[in-house]
Amino acid sequence: MPRARSCSSPSTRSTSACGRSGSTSPPELRGKRVVLRPVKPGDEATLLEIFSDPTVAQWWGDPRKAVADTMEAEEGESHFLIQVDGETIGIVQSYEESDPMYHHAGIDIAIRSPWQRKGLGPDAIRTLARHLIDERGHHRLTIDPAAHNTGAIKAYERVGFRPVGRLRQYERGPDGTWHDGLLMDMLADELRD
Image (cartoon, rainbow, N blue to C red; front, side, top):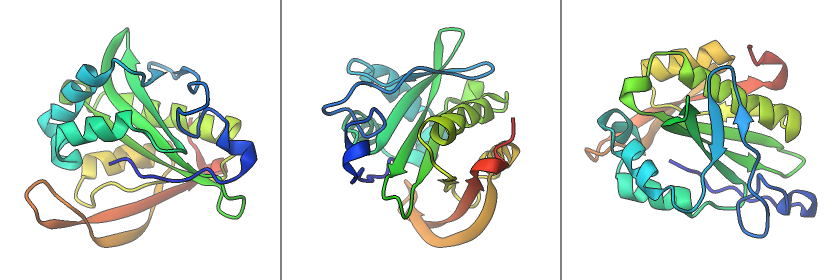
């Protein structure tokens, strides 16, 4: 789910990665096979299709709430549709902490089931990570999959993330039970191409 983070310094408050209000959209980003296009008004139906995919909804919960959260981006959040050959296959997003004492960012991703296990998730994550490191100046990135989401964990490890801790009863699943999360991080020089 999207996480609200604030961009507190005046130098980052007006930049594109600090939400949509009063700023221009983040740039379109290109990976090896994917294009990351900023989410914009009118993308609600596409987002609903992504978040309604059963393999996505099991991790993200109520699809309509996920769409609303995405469209109402908080300061410090950037949301991108993942596209391959013009077809939208998922969403990847970041949330940035701009305080110079903690200048890092987190990433979340959701890919529709027909496009999973094709190397496209790592390409999208790597593309956004490169932007966050090179263009936004972050030295550390985090991602926090469900601890039992082994496919996602392997994909994140291929990009350079590594497990740093288990978050007990971290999030509630759609069935109402609590599930552990796995905190993973990656330093800027650990990003794998």
